[in-house]
Length: 146
Image (tube, rainbow, N blue to C red):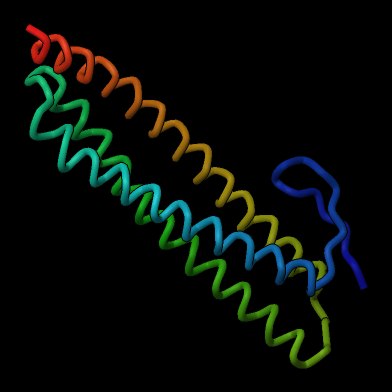
C-alpha cells in the first residue's frame, strides 16, 4: 500500500515503507557528510582565521563559528530523529505489517523539511564564511608580498 503526500519540496510523492527506509539511509549518509563539512569549517576557523584575522573582523568570524556550532547541534538532533524514524520503519518491515503508512509518510515529510531547512542554513553560513574570509585572505596576501 502506498500513500500520497505533498513533500516539503512541493512534489507529490508516493512512498512505500521500503522506499521510506531507503530514503532515511540516504539522509544518514548526507548527515555524515555534513558532519565532516562542519568539522572542516570549524577547524579552518579555529586554526587559521581566528588567530590571524584582523581585529575588526574577529566578531564576524566568531559569529560564523557560533553558527557552525549551532548547525552541528541541529545536525545531531536531526540525526537522532532520522535514526528513530528508520528504526520504526525497520520494525514495520520486520513485521511485514503496515497500519499507519500515511502517518509514516507525514512524519517522513516533516523530517525531510527539517533536513532541507538545515541544508539551506548550512549553505547560508558557508556563504557568510567565504564572504568574510575572502577579504581577510586578500589582506594577508598584501602584507606578505610587501
